[in-house]
Image 1 (tube, rainbow, N blue to C red):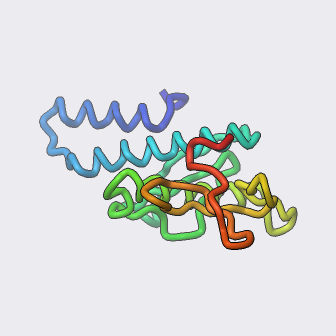
Image 2 (image 1 turned 180 degrees about the vertical axis):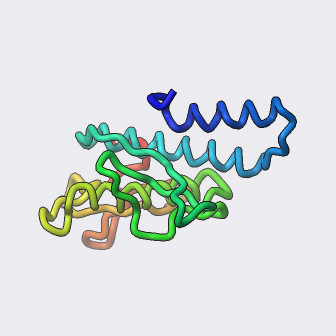
Length: 156
């Protein structure tokens, strides 16, 4: 059972709790599903850029209400995590998860010593950051006046 994806284990726990009549926070359950969908989009970008490691959402002891992205190397984002309010809508959840993933992945790539950034803008080789732009989540490159490097989940 430990080999099953975290999302499947969470859904199983939710099913068991609801079957047994336990009060379930429906909003929290929906937010968790929203964060998982966002993480799937980031995973697609990882694969498109050649990263083969795995990332997951975890709830660490130090931030029981917040989720953080953890990489294959055990690295996590540098902030206090993804707050429940960050999953208020699909776009904000996507940007929050992408930022946590970017931070954790760069830590796993040992960027401070190697200079490797993720994801790197194909046009400039500079690191890009997730942001909301015209109603969609994008990886934004700051080169020049700034531009969209790719839509999150659709890295070419």
